[in-house]
Length: 404
Image (cartoon, rainbow, N blue to C red; front, side, top):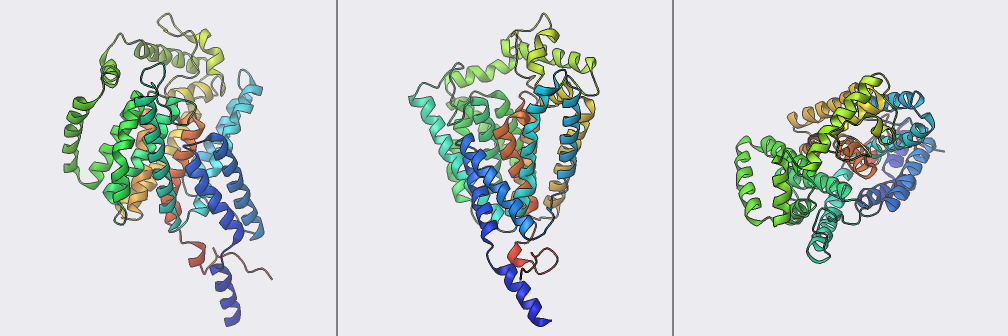
């Protein structure tokens, strides 16, 4: 019997090459998200394959964080909405994005224990590089107006600004809560904030400000006095184009502001038409001309620039309620970790990411952007993964069984 215990412990401590492949692929995927969607997709596929093979090899059921179940429920109601869509074929094909939800259990397994901070380090480092590239685009390559904004290596400036917003959340949280490595995120913070400002993306600005305010309040409520000082520096140093974009927030005649109001009216009309299952995923754009009012600026819009409204219009009010349950459940779990001082830095990153996503999501459909969604899911899963012991530390039922 003692021999059997020794054998099991040795097996648990021995590096599993399948898991190693999955871990390396997952770290590469987390970094590649900000560089190339093609590379990120390949590395994500390798991550998921390695994870599934590991589970099959060790005859182990996948473990998930608690918030995964309402997320899975959201996937289920999305498929129901697709079946009852105006065009089920188009909606079902669009629902392939639901596969990305598997990021949660994969990261929960592969980034457990002390691995999670390494993933954050990679994300912040790559984010710093893309921020520097965005500043160069603005300063030297004439990506300095609304027609052509800095976009890093992404295909769209909104995706780029959304990713920068999440990396800002991670960097600020590390400066405030990471006891071991604050220097690097502090050094790259100016580049991240400058690049985010130069994207001229107001929704990402609002999301980042809300997340930073939350993090300062979590550290010490008195730190909120820093925000007015930062605002003064921003107004003093911001280029004219950035200031013009900022001032447009308060201009009732700004065409983008007027069009967002028109999109809101169109979205409510879609909800009234079918409050239970919506018009169907990916059907807002083709149906928009039927629902837009005379106040609409654009004849066609790809989405409604508002996450809750988009979900309700596409998938129905039940889907919105389930999605709100997912967000609330994830946030509640992170708040409990923060109060218990467990994984404080990572939990603060996850909570800040949720606040940034929701706040920016009032003006942009960021949850429907694949690159943004993938990084968001990684960030909110990492605290729960870090709260699990590494496989090498497990000697109980979680340890993989010894193979003869």
